[in-house]
Each structure stands twice: as C-alpha cells, then as structure tokens.
Length: 187
Image (cartoon, rainbow, N blue to C red; front, side):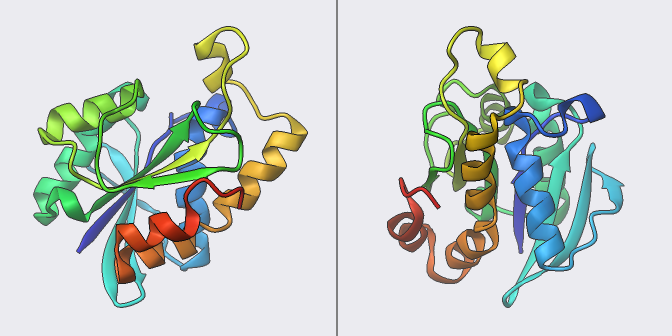
C-alpha cells in the first residue's frame, strides 16, 4: 500500500495559491483516477483506490502546512505504510513555474511542511514530487500565499495535469525512472 500526500492549507482563501499546489495536484489525481476524497480522518481528507495495481491512500492534511506531519504520521501508522511508500507532493520556490523535480529522499529545503513531516516520521527517506512555483520577488510569505500570474498558471496547470503519469511511473517503475522522464522539464 502507498500513501500519496498533497500539501497545502485548508480554507477557501488558500485554494488557488502557490503553496496549495500539492492539494491541487492531489485533487486532479483523485478526479482522474475516480478516487473519492470524502473521508475525514487522520487530521485530513482522504480517499482510497488503486493506481494501476497498487492500492493507495490519497491524503490532504488539514492541519495547515506547518503541521502536515501530524496527519501524515497518523495515516502511515494506521495503515502501517513504510516511509519509502509515502509520496509527498508540494510546491518549490526554487523551481520555475511548470518544472517538476522528483527525488527519492532528501532534506526539507526550507519548506516548513516538509520539515514537520521529516521530523515526525523521523526520516527524510521518502519520495517526493515538487512543482515549481517560481522564486519570490519580495516577501516569501506573500509569494507562496499569493496566486499565480496567468502565464505561470498555464505552466503549473500543464505540469499538474501530468501527476497521474508521474505517480504511475513512480509506483510501477520506481522513482529513478520517474526522475529521468520528468525532472527539470517544463511539462
């Protein structure tokens, strides 16, 4: 079993912000795979289904970004999912809009949601999919909680529409294969 987590902040005011790219991607994945995200569990909203032959739990933590690890840890413990079977999807200010970077493990890179997940799982050895949202021109908080320009929105939306391909390749062929196919390309 795999746990696929999209990071974001709950609430209407955050819906289409850069920091909610993980939620947006997970919603798209759920819709594409006809997985109903209707259970409120593990301090999040989740749904269960299959991606190919792999049973998966999709999870959107509702703890606000900085406490995402609480939700991820609860779900992982309940289903007994090992860290290497958890995929976290989130925003990255160090990538230009529309670029994707997949990694098998690594540091939080300054992302507070990832810091909390790494801390509460007590490991950074889990795969992740980062969607570029561009670097801030001024204030970081205003940037990540702000909305995309029309041009950036087109690039990010195009990349998000490949999340089902990305996750399918990760589950079927491994993270290394997904990295070679999707990393640093504007999708």
